[in-house]
Length: 381
Image (cartoon, rainbow, N blue to C red; front, side, top):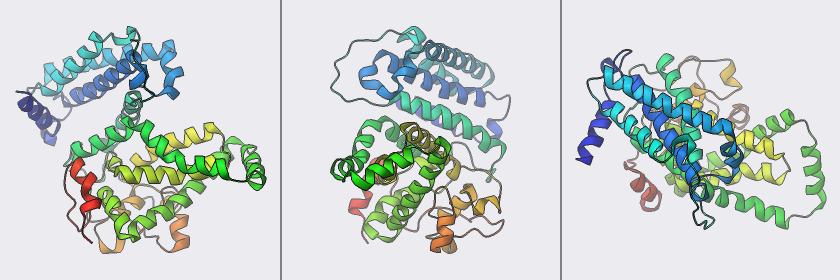
């Protein structure tokens, strides 16, 4: 019975374009589901903050405005779910959203009180996942419908379930990822001499905030360029990165498909210059927020050639060529923010007005999160 219901929900989400136009109840059901899941995550974070929430978001959860926002999210989920149930012959979307919103209400809704739980020092970023999902999903999903590059590509295209699970894991495991990625910079900070490093930190921390932010983007992009290029050149490392490139469709969710090992190594490399050189914490926090949005933008199914701007700022067409199945796009466009690095090091490719014919990798990368987690270790070649 459970399997049948989940299958009906999947079919409703993957409905053809003609069955989810304006007035069919599909969009109201979709947004109801997004808001209901977000509301449930927020309520869980308020009820069990010791294990379900990020400590860094504590001040936000403690504010009265946050509870008011949670109340508004749940009310909107209820209203949109009921609208979907009224308009749509298939009831799976609206019924699921309604059930999730009801579960959040039973847990206490916006008035939920904290339960005392034993804290082992381990937490899962349920609230972090909800913030990411609302911020990126509600931002890019509508944009891809209004300004699509591939108009025939559905919002819930092939492999969307895998990529959503990647998105969930990378958000929920934020504590473990953060611990592992901060280890290199912590070691360097503890063992580096106080001379030149102390003076460098003082100089950088004294720069205007905006200058620090742009400098942080430039430094991390340079580090990430060579890290990225290394993963394309070393066969064993390519096994991890091939998981990311195995996506055969590009949209805002495709950027989440990254092997856990690559996530840890990438974030460790990119955080190293920021933490070692003394950038203000607010600069680092703002940059982390930017990266989540920027990654969604680069992979988004959005039109626009941007031939001039794209030569200096990484935009969807620039990064789509990096994922191209076409031979001329292989091992090109490694930068994440500034294509100037590709121009300097000879890996720039952005033919005027042209887009790739397809995406993916020639090798057979298995489907499913666990199979892809094992893939680099069992891959031959």
